[in-house]
Length: 221
Image (cartoon, rainbow, N blue to C red; front, side):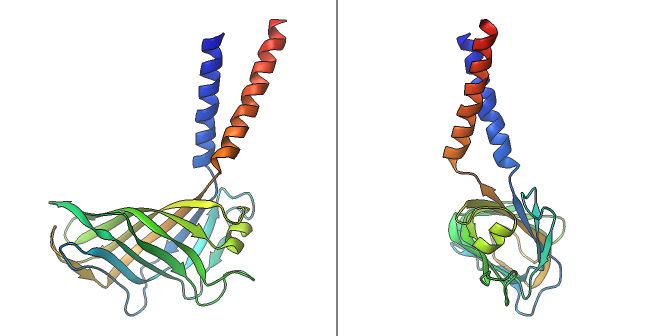
């Protein structure tokens, strides 16, 4: 009986984790058309990776409790980021440390009452991969906050925690661990997902576990 209860509790906690992963996701799309001055650069040595004035044209809410699948256009949407300093490299990678900042802004509100700062946060890790020829991909993870009006539009409570990823392609010349600079930015996307409060997940699991035990007790009678 104890073994069964333990297995039941474990299954419930794992299912709770799955529900967290399947929460509301905001997908900010980046096409290959960027304004003058857009660039990605790394100066070499103990320096950060910097992305400036990268165009973001829309955001779509996925698996949202409200307005699921709705796409909102951004007026003058821009992504800017700066990582922590370079921490390691090999023949095909540059790895940058945590820190710095990431933000997505617009030149006019995406929704009535929204601010021009849609997303802001801190980068956790960034990896640049050297692909075929001079093709490179930025893979990053970060923690952030999302404008409360935008979050509410997709059914997420204001003040919720968010975690995200950045994938972006661009062309440049250079080999690790040397520096590079590119104004030939290709397409990509910035995604961020709402993270439920641990207490709410735990309470939900406890409730389901209680119902399971109650059913077992009645069955035993």
